[in-house]
Length: 156
Ligand SMILES: CC(C)(COP(=O)(O)OP(=O)(O)OC[C@H]1O[C@@H](n2cnc3c(N)ncnc32)[C@H](O)[C@@H]1OP(=O)(O)O)[C@@H](O)C(=O)NCCC(=O)NCCS
Image (tube, rainbow, N blue to C red; front, side, top):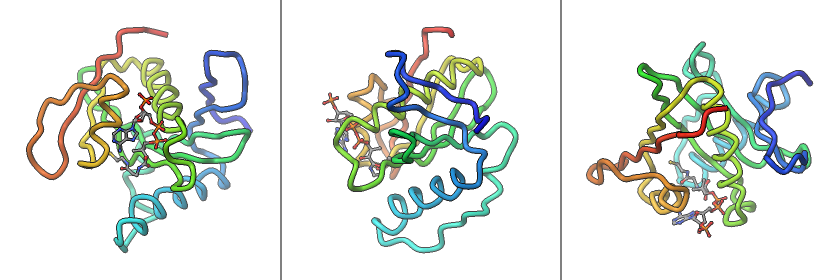
C-alpha cells in the first residue's frame, strides 16, 4: 500500500500511523469512530460519508498495530500553522494500553511534517486527563468540550 506512513522512532514497524486512503483503511477508520464515539455513547447518526473527512486540508489517520487498525483520529489544518485534532478514538478493548499515546505521537509527527506548530483540540470532558498526560495545556476549561493546546517545537 502506498499510503503515507509515520513509523515510530524505534525503527520498528510494530506500530505506525497511516494517512487513510485505501478502502480497507477507510472502513476501519469509520468502524472505530462509529463504535467508540457514537455507539459506546449511545449516539446514533454516524455519517461515514461526511464531507469533512474528504476535505483537502483534513487528514484522516489510523493507528496500525502489526497492520491491525486499533485507533483513528483526524487532523484538520487551519491558518497560522495551527491544526485541530478531531475524533480521537481507540477501540474499546484496546484502551488503557498506551495506544492512544502512540496514535498522538504519530499524529504529531505527521503534523510537524505539514508545517504545523500548534495543535488544538475540543476535548471530551473525560479525555482531558489523557491530553494532560501527553503534555497538552488547558486553555478553556468551561463548556461541554474543554479546549487544550500543544506547541510542536520539534521540526522534522
Ligand atoms: C481517550 C483515549 C483516546 C485514550 O487512549 P488510550 O489508549 O486509552 O490512552 P493511553 O493508554 O495511551 O494513555 C496515555 C496516558 O493518558 C492517560 N489517560 C488515558 N485516558 C485517560 C483519561 N480518560 N483520563 C485521564 N488520563 C487518561 C493514561 O493514564 C496514560 O498516562 P501515562 O502514560 O502517564 O500512564 C481512549 O481512551 C478513547 O478512545 N476514549 C473514548 C473516546 C474519547 O474520549 N476520545 C477523545 C475525544 S477528544
